[in-house]
Image 1 (cartoon, rainbow over the protein chains, first blue to last red):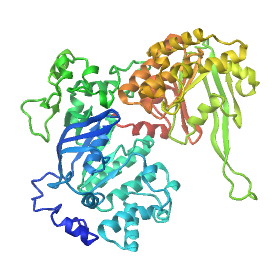
Image 2: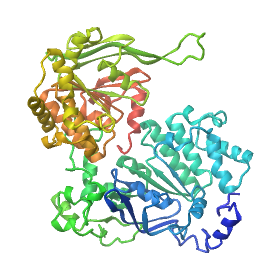
Image 3: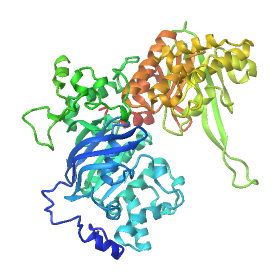
Length: 362
Length: 271
């Protein structure tokens, strides 16, 4: 019914595709759905070449939900764009990104186009700018179906209606011909989700999908994403700056700062114990309901450093309460918080050699 | 309690905007953006205005700032009806209430130096009224001390907005609001564009300034946790109407209206 192998449209592409089979005889149960190994991205800026991602590693299994937290400029979105192959042209990518065992970083643009939309899809933050204002929404949902699955216009339009009903857009049938400006923010985000899910991708990347929405709508949209992801057994990579939101939405969280993952743990473990000084600062700085009026929040001194000012070592060093001079020189390795638990998928990892001093002083 | 002076009072405030007509033959229809809103704010206290987009939060802020004329009702600031003042008296009065906007990137003129941005209210409000002009040295001193209040250096006066981070820009916007020594600052989502760690710095700063100068805030926000922290009283707006109002403690601990309860339940990660 649904074709998992992208359908080639032209014969030239068919030749190019012969050496590339995303479902290459890999036993699906062993290979992780998505595997990111030592992903490094450097960007060309006015200040010269800068390393924007400094070795990101993670794996995701089918049906897993993974969160990526961090402040602006820490590399969250860049990680997503690198996986999707949507980086600016002059960006240099090192390392490996494998989807079902097939390497993505070496694919040609045409091959990547076959993967995007069909096998991996992305939901962006601002649904108004991500949708085309000049086309009715059914056309935009039908586009990936026609492109990747070779559906006819009528079939694709019928499927678009099914998809809109699945994302619970009220009065979906009447709204097929609506233009994006006729919908509210939450409704537009539902349309975005239906587009992303149209070809039943293996992985869904949601980059701040609800930041532009009101809290009550945000809650609805997030629970919709979670429900659809578990129904289809997709992998979900949720990117957000909102810690509270992560707690309810994902099983495992990675905290990023300065282009590197500084801490990763199962959500429950992270909320029980924060090891990295940055994660601790981030949690403490958050206003919470129930704080007494006028309570001063704990702050992290200074501000996020500009990308071209990152030190060789830990980017958090200059704001860190426990930093020692060597911190700014060498980027520390990830180490397990509990030395007995070192399974890369479930252990609690922290990129700070002296995090225990903070634990002792607390 | 009753001895504290009421700084700002809003009585039965309403605002409607005309909607586009489909033909010149039909009667114009109006959108009631705000309907029968009343509240009082005492000197030195903060009032939070909470609601979702389209609830009339920003319309209310603009009316309090006298940036628009209301269709119904009145705004009384320091015992005077704001929208009945003549232009000269209005300028005089404007010194006393200032605004901080949401977007620290859009609210500072990129072509002006910080000195000009911060000292502009001094020139356009204070001295246009009294007819005096302020000397360069005095302007510089006032601007430098306003910057010092918000934790920036006087050497920052010669820089342009693009040289600052989002949090620093919001500090500049607060310095600009402070320079005329106002008694009321209307802040429309002042921290929602900032990162968590920077947001905490700016909120602490605003609380410190309130303690130091007895400022009052009208604090517009969709973030209930921030309002809970900053405000003594809260009004909850839904579709232009006040659905619940009261002290911050009462509302956040024991919300009565279903809409307020829904807003509180939707705040992620508070359980």
